[in-house]
Image (cartoon, rainbow over all chains, first blue to last red):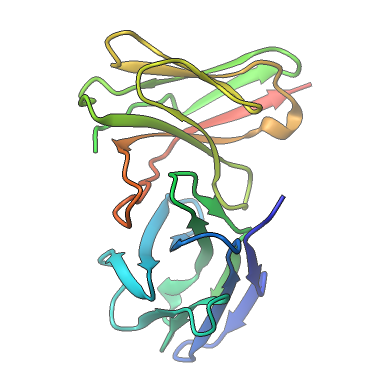
Length: 112
Length: 113
């Protein structure tokens, strides 16, 4: 069964550094998502992406965040200048024309 | 989206049926009931969804009451690997970009030997 692949599985960075989290969605998916989960808290929506542009974003997704799908396969989340509170598990998701959203295994981001 | 209420935790013996309830008394006519689960530290996993008819797939069954104010997710023969947090989400179905599942606290199901 096809899977959503996220790399790296664990990223450690210093506060203020830029990080890029990578995702390879399932090939026939059209809509793409980033969510995050701070330890012990709910899974929170960050952004959705369709047809090479952002469809919706939450209040968390401020100017420090950006997404792109540069080559039609990889879907990336960039955090320009990381803060301690950005430490979380980040999940990439995707779906086709139905509502079945498939998620990857996540990238654990630790900001020191 | 309609508000949902789930018990914070439940447990079940391996091999028995796990019945996870969800109340959604303010559900409107065009809102579907979706279930996802999250096994520890993994991404959420879609299980099943329905509007008013009962639904069954290879993972689970979804029973929706006639008034649609509550539903039950049934795992017919729970295994240890079904230990997870189960989320009941109610929202309007949309195949467009506005479909954004919102995850609450869910029910933590522990399946014990």
